[in-house]
Length: 372
Image 1: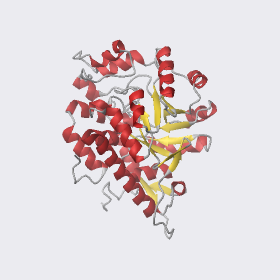
Image 2: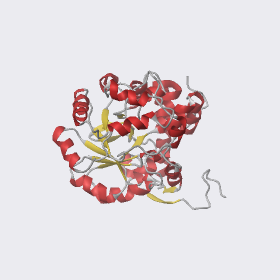
Image 3: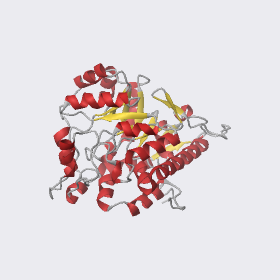
Image 4: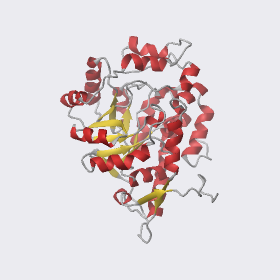
C-alpha cells in the first residue's frame, strides 16, 4: 500500500528507501566516482527558472503528445533500468503495466530481469534498449526478439563503453541474488553478475565481459541494415555527436549523462540540451533524461528543447513501494505536477511549452524558493 502522505516524487523516494535493502538502494541511487554529476544534474535543473506567460486563458491543459509517431498521455517514457526484480517480484512486468495504465511508453532494458516476451503481455507501448555486445549474434537475436514481441523502437545506449566506477557497488561487493538475473542472456553469461567475489562489483564484471567498447558510427549502419524500427541513440551531450547522429539517419536522440552513473564530472544533461536541439533542429526527435524529479522538471526540459523526457530513478521508487500501483501513483503525481506547471506558465498544450523562455535562477533564491 502507498503511504497517504506521499504527495510528490521526493516523498515516494523516502518511502522507497524505507522498504528497499541498503545494497539495492545504493545500486539504484549511486553514481560514478564522487557522484559529482549526480549532484550537478539536480543543481542544474533547480537553477533553471521558467518565465511564465499570463492572460492565456488556460483552464484545462492538454499534456498528451506524440512520441515516435504514437500518442502518449504525457511527454514521458520510462527509462531502461536494469534488474527491476531487485525492487519488486514482478519487476519490469509490473512497471510496464503501470506505463500502460498511464499511457506512456516503457523501454525494456537489455539487462531486464524478465524477458521481453513476458513484458509484452502488459500490452504497453514498448521500446527496446540495446547495449553493443561483443557477441554480435546475440545482439542480432535480441533485436529480432524485440521486433517479434512488438517493440516499436530500438534504443541504443552509446555512453557505456565500460561501466562507470560506481564506488558504492565496489565497496558493497554488489552481486545479484540467486533469483535475479539478466533474462536476455544465456545462463552461463548471466551468472557472472551473481558471483560474490568479495572484491568489486559482479554486475560490473558482467558488463565488462559482455559489452563491446569498440562501438563506433559504422555500427549504426549495421543496426540500420537489420531493423526497420526507429533507432534512438541514448547518451549524447555534444552537439557534434548529435549532428553525426542525424546524418547517420537515426530517428531520435536522448540527451543524457546516464544519471551521473558514467563519466563523473560530465556536463549536466539539461545544460547540454539546448545546443543539441539547436544542432539537429527538426531533423530528429530529442529526448532528455538525468535528474528529473518533478513535473516542473519535465516542463523545464521541454522549454529547453526536448520533445519528451525519460523517467529514471523515480520510476523505480514507485515500483519498490507498491509495484504497479506504486509506479502508477508516481506517474499520476508527475502528471498533476506537470499540468500545474503548464497552467501556471500559460501553456495550453505541450507545443506551447517550447515557446517559453528560461533563465538562470538568481543566486539569491535558495533551492527551497526562499529569499536568502
